[in-house]
Image 1: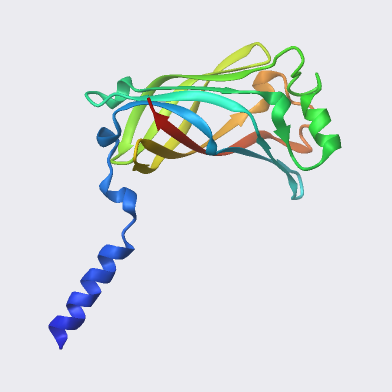
Image 2: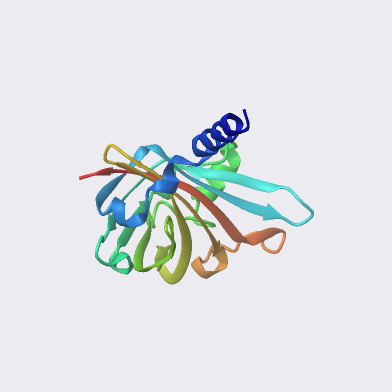
Length: 191
């Protein structure tokens, strides 16, 4: 009876392990086109005393290339279209698109180009690169965690913090935080 209980416990433990635990970055070698299906780019800006607002970008494109021989030579390119920003509040959306913040009419793209990828675990990496918005470029870092690899589709959970004042978007500070918290799901299709 004891052996049976231990056997059931071992089977339950195996079932409870995340599927991605068996997938390592080296297994994911190849080039992937970021798909808007299954992907999401969310951000949060806090407000003094609590609150703030959340938003997302509906349009973006990019690619992820994972080098099997040397993960540090992997690349990430991401382009976000700021006119697609949405908070669920039309007045705030229009303000964010205006020349006070994104200036989407004159700066229609926000670009991130990686300069290095540093492996931090079997399924994680620190991605460093150059972010360009409103004609200004600065180094930024994001953490990426491999969430899955199946049938030519790869999925990453990416987080990072960006100071908006660097890019001339500091309107509303200090009432609204200078720090923009990004929380992204990037799903790529091989090929």
